[in-house]
Length: 288
Ligand code: UTP
Image (tube, rainbow, N blue to C red; front, side, top):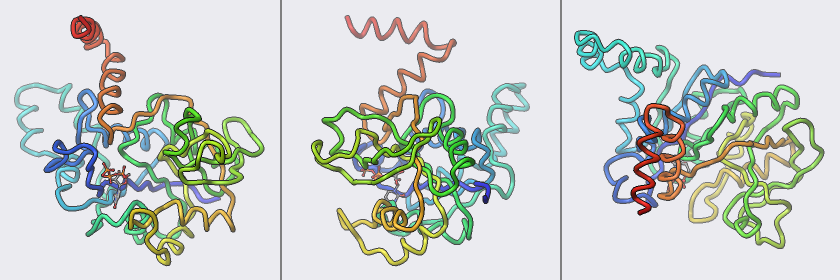
C-alpha cells in the first residue's frame, strides 16, 4: 500500500460568506487566537506525518505563501532583541525547504477544479485533502484517518454526526460494516432530504483519495452552482474503488462562517492557560 506523503490545501475560494473581511484578505488567514486558520490545518497534517504541503491558491492569496516563507528581517530583529521564544515558534511552523508547493487556480471554478490543479504536483500516488476552513478540534483528524487507511487502503473520508434536521446542508454517507473507528461507506449523497438521508454522518472536509480521482476530474462537467464538484467525481470513483469512513470524535468549526469562526476563537482561547481566566471574565462581563 502506498504511503500518504502529500496533502492538498485548496485556498482559492472567494470566501463570500465572510465579506467584507475577505475582500482583500484570504479567509484562511483569519486568526483563531494567534494562528491563522490555515496554520492550524497545516499543523493537523504535519501531526499525521504529511511531508509535502501543496497549496492551491488564487489572486489575493499571496500572503499565504508569505506566511509559509522565512521572514528574514523579522527573524533578524527577534534575534537582536533576544526574543528567542517567538523566534523558535516561527521557525517550527515553517515547512522545510522544498516541502511546500504553490500552484494557482486561475478561476474559482469549484473545489473539484482546485484539487485537479494540483494533479502534476501530486503525481500518481494517493494523497490527503484538507479543506482549510473546516477546523477539526482535538487530536489530528488526519492522523486518525491514516490509521483507518493503513488497515483498509482505498479512499477515506472523515465524517461527523450532524442533527437530522441539518443533513440537507451536507454530503451524507451510508454506514456499512464497522471496524474500530472506521467503517465501510455504502453510499454518498449530496445534500439529501432528511427522510432520504442514509444516515446523519456528514463528510467533514478531510479526505484520503487515490490518484484516479484526477482522471475523473479532468472529464467532469460543471455541476451544481456552475462549479466542478469534488463529490461528483468521488461518486464515480466509488463505482470502482472502496471508500471508508473515519468517525471524528472532536468538534468541527466551519471557519468560513461567522458563527463557526467566533465559536472557534472562544473554544481555542479557553484552552490557553495564558488567556482562559481573562477571557472567561470578559465573556461573563459581556453577558451582563
Ligand atoms: P467553500 O465553498 O467553503 O469556500 O469551499 P468559498 O467558495 O471560498 O466560500 P464562500 O462559500 O464563498 O464563503 C471549500 C474550500 O475550497 C476552496 C475554498 O478556498 C475553501 O477552502 N475552493 C473553493 C477553492 O480553492 N476553489 C474554488 O473554486 C472553490
